[in-house]
Length: 530
Image 1: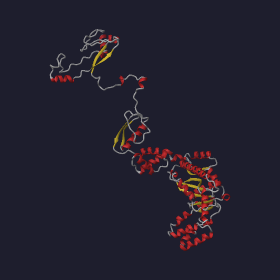
Image 2 (image 1 turned 180 degrees about the vertical axis):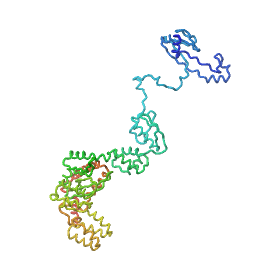
Image 3 (image 1 turned 120 degrees about the vertical axis):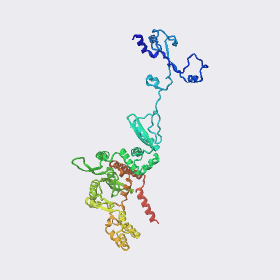
């Protein structure tokens, strides 16, 4: 094979392509009038193609041979076949034309794209970005939409399908591609509910399961079983406030921070040692220095003791010591987290409290309780000289379990409010005449523990109920279900807010007495003037 043949094969793309002969095609010399109707119809349907121009340089045009339809070598290099159509250009570059019937097809290839210059980037089409702040029900998808991460895309997909009330099934889950199918059911599972409740707990940390149900129903239009919402709410709290088990390992750091920020505070942890592993948590005691100093300086010497259940995962009991200030507001002195309410735990709590407040003989402390388990025995062992009162409301509730007579129940309160010993004896004789069994039941209690006539004069306080502790327990009922570290911090924050509020109210008082005491005195004066 000579050089001319080699060049012919290499430059075959520029030669004129002669279309193949087709059947039933009339010769070019026949006019349309002489054609049959069938031939005219076929000719009208025949596609002759378009002409595409290839502009060649002068050097390439000189080296391009011309070959005929049979493939034999045509004219010499540099010569032009008379049958070829040649158009001269101002730059004298030869032009070759060929028929191309595929030019109108909708096909685009990346190999035909030229590199994008910096000027073209300004006019480049940009895909819309997904709005992560879109509210539930406002998620919309568009072709070519851009997502920052695959997790954001999955979350938006789940929100859309839950809103439509359908289930999503993933067919293929790859790092850069996801294929999913729509099923005709709801896909609001616990993981999805948890992700929605986590956002809500940021603004509503005390959300209850009932409130969570209403939130999902009103804002997401989904009806969820109570068990699912309870577990989802618990999982959401673990994400927002940390797992409960992990918080026990941070108690030492928490107490160290309390000692640093409020010097003089008492914080103690009692643990159960284990030789083969880390020790187990047993008890925790906290008393802020401001609470101890404030109680000694401006509160009555009557301390209410009470215990209540903790509603967290690990349970336990909360022991509290609460006082009363000059305006009859409760004043928290100390609190402790123990494993159970018994003699041993009360003895441990009262021993530390005695060390913080000082001896009873010097300060004259009085205590009031609801007859908790083991409290009376522990108090007698730790502080035998302390006066101990019983809450009359607790005695009365136990009394009415045995005696249903309305008149007899009223006599109990009348005897309790007696201010002199003679008046108390007369009221007890009246109870004996009405119901001797009721009189025998009341004789079991020491008069100094439940009637005003025998109260100690040291506290200068005639309280007959332990409302100080009851109010404190009612205020913290929502905090008692949280993990231990979060719960203690909530207690500390509430105590600070309570003290600041009381201080602000008393500053507005211009008289010598507190507002409550002044009001009480004015009532006595108005009654005496009648």
